[in-house]
Amino acid sequence: MVENEVPHPDPAWDYYPLWHSLHHIKAKIDSALNFMIQEEYANPGTDEELRKILDSASDKLIEIVNQFPDDDDV
Image 1 (tube, rainbow, N blue to C red):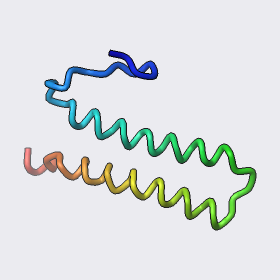
Image 2: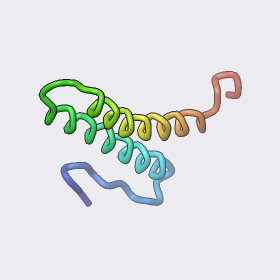
Image 3: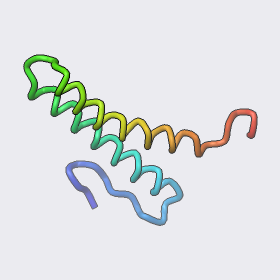
Image 4: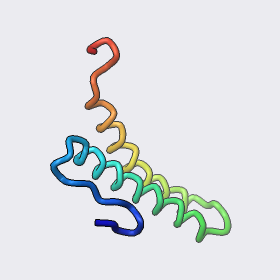
């Protein structure tokens, strides 16, 4: 299945949960980029809105990265 030109892999694939989570993060980043495009000038209100969007994406990405074993653990 293809949604918005992005192939949708088999949910039985080992990386499917990671793939799915990363696409949610990407959607948040895309949302921030689209929000920025709509704003002519930076201001505290838009900065705060961008921070909210990107903090959520950042927190989830850090959570995902921390699930991988450290180089010392391999």
